Length: 305
Image (cartoon, rainbow, N blue to C red; front, side, top):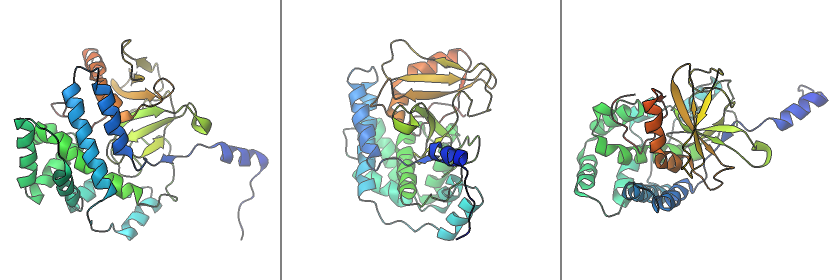
């Protein structure tokens, strides 16, 4: 078979190139649940974190035994990959509604002590028709939080994460091509929730952005704002009393920030739970006029992004 011959330097560069994509582990939601329960033990938002741990445990149960979903359009997925577009494009798949059985399965599985307000939110999701659920989901994914009841966010967000992670884990991504400055998820097009700084093996010191929707991780150069791509005077802010290994990468050019989880400081850390455990850092950055760009689909921040 004919092909290009690599020179020794090219071979070394190819061997040392970090993997572009990291898929989430199949027990992702169980890990999140365990971490949230652990963090809650000494956290002022303990009840909230325990509730979200129960949300994640139900996610894992459904991921392990998923309902039957309409199959993805393989031709469309392949063409998206060939043209550098996300094969699990969130806006398209939300409108098509193939994710809705995941919401029903999660609602049937979730079983935890709830307050009257939580019970009301769950009933509102159960009784809503498909059109309303799609409208709410699009509002959530586009950051239009004023267009859906805030109490629905973590439960609707859990179902969306579940569906897209399920699709992601079943998708062949060997042909997915890396693009420079990929600020949105190459698999579904959603914004990153946070960054993770690796600390072991060939990926030691590398940064991966973590998708807020499908949980895919993709390599992104450090010391660069993933929003405006500036490298000027990036600052790293953290709270001295935070045990979560989290720093906020704050950009003075666009005044946005993205939290970074340093696994050398917190080897057992997990990005979503670390984000929720450091909301006091968000308050500090808001006081300094920095804007959070990264969504956490289990959190209703108030207002629109």
